[in-house]
Image 1 (tube, rainbow, N blue to C red):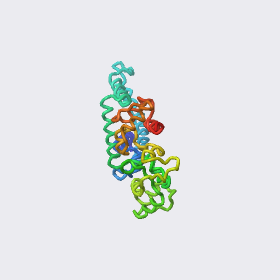
Image 2 (tube, rainbow, N blue to C red):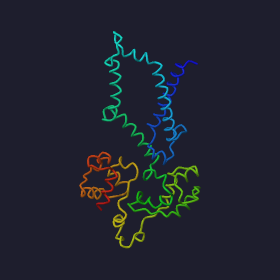
Image 3 (cartoon, one colour):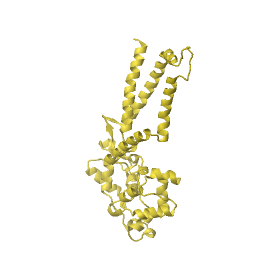
Image 4 (tube, rainbow, N blue to C red):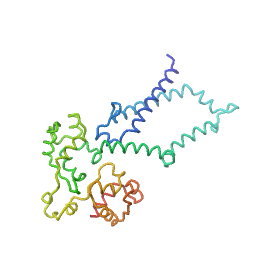
Length: 302
């Protein structure tokens, strides 16, 4: 067996697998969406595609170094001029170096067409999120069921902006009726999902379905006021959950049936002037904060 042939063919095959897995990761959803909705492509999950990509990166790097060693004389020959002296100013070397620098600097500076290409990837990921759903907060699938029931009211609302409350025992009964067995409410959503062959999102849908509007009796006596406005005063504005950087305040207000003018007024009172149609990840750096910080200010300004 000739080593040059072995190495060259391994470089080719590993490149194909590396490129293929890279494409799958590029067009696949963000991790939080993939884990939440149980996304798979060609029978492999995002974690599995990531594992394939990483291991073939190691193989490609190893055989690539070996390939370079075996062909070192030829590579050095590419840098020699007519006098057989090695010069790094050869046009071919400068062109190759310039091309690599372009592909390094381009994405970092948002240079066309790199920005447009990356935007396509973001739009594909956003499509998965729109069609497959996303968790109410990062890695919600790792939350205990009882804790999830308690916290979901902060991220989910019923019609007309009514705040949501979920009784964990009622949720367990509803899950059982849906064919999802829950042995312990302290189990995480992902463990329950795996044990029943469903997705964390399917479990969350059942849990939310048993939610009911928060009533004055659910609040401490000193926090009871009139109507949902007083309840929001006690509970705060709902948290948009994961993916908050890509939403606008208009989308946020529509999702939770809030008064957009009220939201804008509260933020403006704290010195945060935000265009209602501007994505929060674009507005936050300009205001010296983060998307999370914007919602913290929103509740501080109640």
